[in-house]
Amino acid sequence: MLHLLDAQPLMHLRIFWWPCTAGQWAQKVAHPSANITKEYFVRVNSKPTNQQVKTVVEGCMVEGRHVSPVAVQLEGDRSMRVAVSDGRKREVRVLVEHCGLEVEALKRVRIGQYRLPADLKIGQIRELSRSDLQKIVRLPTPSIPRGTSTARGMPRKSR
Image (cartoon, rainbow, N blue to C red):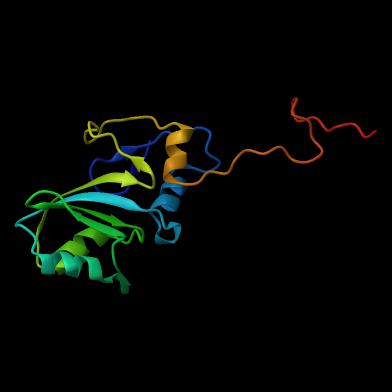
């Protein structure tokens, strides 16, 4: 099992058929080069002003690189959704705090096209199907090499 990334809820994965270890898979998803969008629900200490939201959208320096979110959406008086694709360490927290807001709660709600179940609690385990994983990262489609039959992968006889 694997604790994937650092925001709540933590995802636990059990991957039996994946052609790499769970740690390698998590690294692929988390690494900035993967360019996989992650969406977070962020609760802040006060109602964001239009200027603060604009500052978040414009981005800031994180780990020596300028990053900006894919999307920012206000939700209620003291919360917003922030989507990022870089995956830099503490990127969402740095983006929000850069505009003068204090992060009170940070919860990952989506990875790629996979929306985390709302009822998933911290430490709770949910096994992901291949379909779920394909929503997170593009998986290679199994293919049959040329010159093999579909029955037991035996070579076809030449005619």
